[in-house]
Structures are given as C-alpha cells and as structure tokens.
Image (cartoon, rainbow, N blue to C red; front, side, top):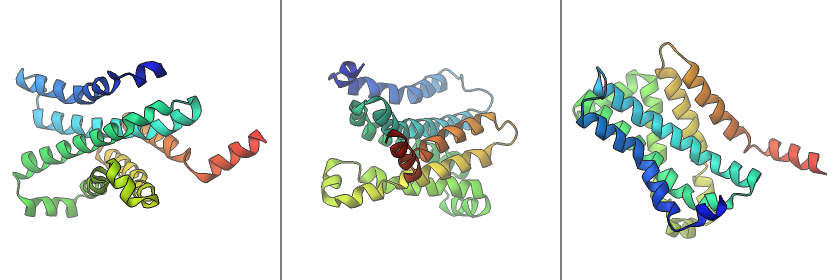
Length: 201
C-alpha cells in the first residue's frame, strides 16, 4: 500500500480521482441526465463533493497517526485545493443560476438566509487557506502557517451547519456527515491526546 502511494503515478491518479465527480457531472449534463432540475442537481453535487473531500482531507492526519501512513501527507495539499475547487463551483453555480451575477441580490440572500451566510463564510475562510497552500507560504509564515490552517476546523463546522440547515426532511445523510466530521475534529483535542498518553504509561 505504502509503496503504491509513493510511486510517481500516485499523484496523477489521485488528481484524476479528485476530478472524477466533476467530469461525471459534465458527462451527465451533456447527455441530459441530471434529473428534472439540473441546476439543483449540480449545485447539490458540487457542494456535497466539497464536503466529502474536506472530510477526506481531515482524515489524513488521523490515518498517519494510527496506521503510520505518513505518505498520505503528500496528497493533503491536492485534496485541500480540491475542496476549494468544488466550493468555488458550488458558489458560482448559485451566483450565476440563482442571482444572474447580481451581487446586490447575492448580498441580500446572504443576509436573509442564515444557511447561505454559513456557506459563504466557509468559502471566505477557504480563500486564505488555498492561497497559502504552497511551500513558499509555509516557509514565509513559519509557525503561523499551522495556526492559519487551523481555520479548516471552523470551515468544517460551518459547512456541516450549512448542510444540516439546508436539509428539509431526511436528516440521515447530514447526520452521518456530522458524526464523521465531529469525530475527526474531536480526535484533535488536547484531552484526547492526554488520555492516550496516560493509557500508554
């Protein structure tokens, strides 16, 4: 497993897997297979895939700690940028399809509907994370880089709340995402590390 992930072909393969949901959406759009409401389908799918890739990105550190898969770290930047890509697509579809690039209407919608405000806030927080995802920023920011990228945790909370608030009937899917997200966030708490340290003594 580790040898496969270390191979030169691993990154291009992961990149293609990251793009696969979007390529499938484009394919379905070309062949008219997006259901009765294509815009709603694309909006939902891009948002949900952004959430899925966000959870996958959060899972990298636990997988490294629990199973010694340090090689996964080489994919974290790519996965993080994939989250930003799908979030931007999700936002642009909403802006174009729902508001026809009318920024005044967009602002009013953000103010009037709290779940929109949550989603928009998460996108705003993702912007500095995407901009500083390169090695030059890591060197320039030093220890502040890690503090800045802890915004990912707030992004996760905002996106989960955005998803739950958006759901009108069946909360099962949103509940599953919430459980996974909070599990990944809780394992980062100092208390968890203290418990495991004491248990190993």
